[in-house]
Length: 412
Image 1: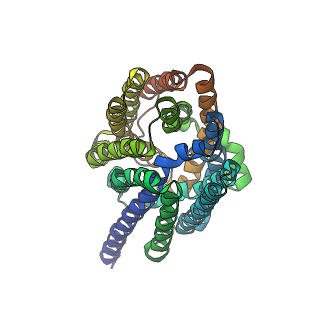
Image 2: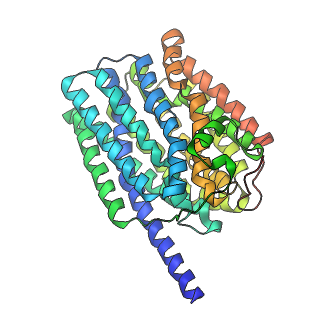
Image 3: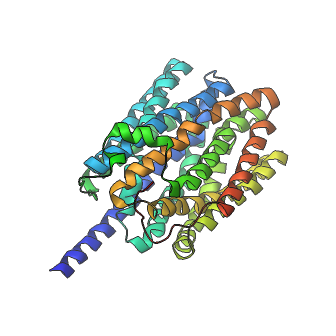
């Protein structure tokens, strides 16, 4: 009977992972298409580079609203399950896209602000989604599970950005935004019907996690065994926000690159990412996380040096494609490190706390990057990004330990 139960659980895990891969593809079509045209769209409505940076600082990947949602989402997910928050995130994303379309119709850039706030609220699902992927794989294959979902996202990114840029050129910016809404609705319906819950909440006795208030209080007090990782990944996010996060806006302003050209760049990066991701995930499972985190930063350093001296579109196209290797090495290594360092019952909560720590310390970066552009020009935010990436490479290589075993208990 136990054997039959284990077999059923393995089958369920395998089926759930397939659903997550399909969801990642649908979500990737939407977000890759919108992301390719988003920054030129903001600038076309009359916004400045600092305002574009402010929008990224508020609701971008490491933005203030996104950051605030991470510990809340992690705490709630550990106590109420994972699936509901993945669904809620799609609802927020649909509302955000509605505001983007409204801003385009009314030609009012200030309407983008509630849109990016709503998009930031969608980050409530990020800890739950990371955990549901880990919990849909065997412990020995966590890196490969994250690689499969990443590959699905990357494959969608081969077509979607170029399609978004082409639609923006032929039909205007509203066309890819509307199509993005249709794709997000499809992902919402797919997850609602087919995704299975992986986490049955149980009483968490650790006094540090007894309440959401205590969780928020301890955002800046991570356990000692996690602190070097917290610091390194936070410097990484801040450095990324200074330059890479606003790169398409910088290229549009400085070199006049069109949405179609930017879409082709994003597609090239996704192609490299997709081709390399699965093999990288296998190597992460075999060889550990830290060396790949350092390698990811080292690749970024090389690319950033190239951006400082590049002048032509083909040069930026090739360099941005190479950055796909950095993305492929970072994702599975990052998730394997934190997954194998935190007990399962507190995994989403710790992921949320880590995200909040990183985001609260780095959310102004994109706004600062926009200011650097107005003060210094294109090389200002890129050089600042380069210095940060080089520092993170050294921190990961010399100061961050490889987690031992699978998960260790939370302790002071």
